Image 1 (cartoon, rainbow, N blue to C red):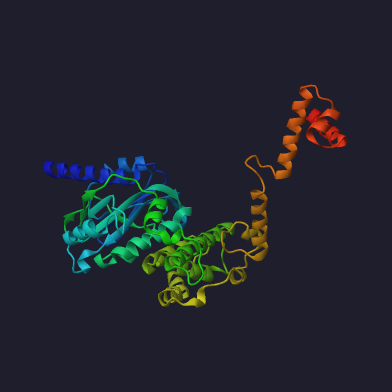
Image 2 (image 1 turned 135 degrees about the vertical axis):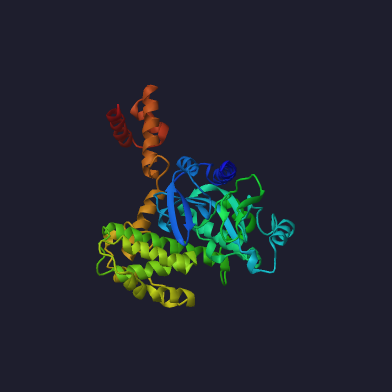
Amino acid sequence: MEQLKMDLDKLLSQSSKHIEVIHEFKADGWITLATKTDGNYKQRHYKYNKLLEELQEVKELVNVYISQNTFYKPQRRIETLRQLRACYIDLDCYNTKYSKEDVIYFLEEDYFNRKIPRSNLIIDSGRGLYLIWIIEPVPYKALPLWRAIQKYLYDQIKEFGADRMAIDPTRVLRLVGSINSKTGTQVKIIDSFDYIYTLREIQKEYLPELTHKKKKGRPKKIVSLYNEYSLYHARILDIIKLCELRNWDLKGYREIILFLYRYWTCCFKEDPEEALNDVLELNNRFKEPLTIKEVLRDTKSAEKAYKSADKEYKYKNSTLIELLNITEEEQRHLKSIIGTKEKYRRNNERRKAERRNKDGLTNRQQQKKDKLEKIKELLDKGYKQVEIAEELGISKQLVNYYVKEVKKVK
């Protein structure tokens, strides 16, 4: 019994160290800790300090997983992402001709600092490897760039068994120190590199296509993907916002909302199974949920469309507004599903903001302020209005007007 306690303490120490490496730096938001026992999957959410405390109460560390990114509420979903804290690739070496040792050798010799940045952690997950890059935490708005980098990393090393379905931002990976029940082995760190990357740094060094100016001809594939991920994410956020605006009373729109959500989530996560779980969770939040059978029936074609890359479901904004009966007031709260009138309103607001300086003044307002300050300065020096007009090259009537304004300020 004493030996078991010593072993558990040692494993917990390694697990804590793993959590510290991933989440200690500027940690913010909820972290997901998940377990899988006899096919039953459970997950709980903790703030950083509380997670370290709770970990000490764990009786066994078998099939334990942790999220690499954080969430602004205790829900592990795309729309609740708070901070992106790491990039990662799950290498299923056992599906390739390469051993773990082979993969590490080729990464060291041919890939790190050449095709991809050196990873901060190489973790033996049991049957495969995890590569993890620690990044300066960024908010969810950087998700399109993060996703493009994930796709780039995947493309570079997919020959070593990179799992395409394990590159979404809500993914949980096995916790260092825990036991993989499939292999009966401990998850452990093989190699580490002490450095914190920024997404822009990785983009600049390894994804130059994203920073090039637009050229004539067909756009680079990676730029196109970047824009698509950005749109899918905005669409998903808009669906959730619309549900919130209607207080989750979606009767009459449940089927189309669930279909769109499942389709866009499939496109974004590239993981149909995860997308199905997400759409079932979304349905449960409705005031009047559909039955599971109805959800499966009404959204099945979404997964089929995703797998066939069917263009039929790339709806225009006008079509979505009509299908969901989105009002002009609701559009004010959405990111991408907006009509022409709302688009013009936002453009006008943007132009107005751009015309103002750091003090919130337009050029005309700033010129008036400068003129008032100059006239006040001259008045304090004893200048008469005629002299001020001559000094500034303006009419006496205008000087008289400004003097009255100066006196009001006093």
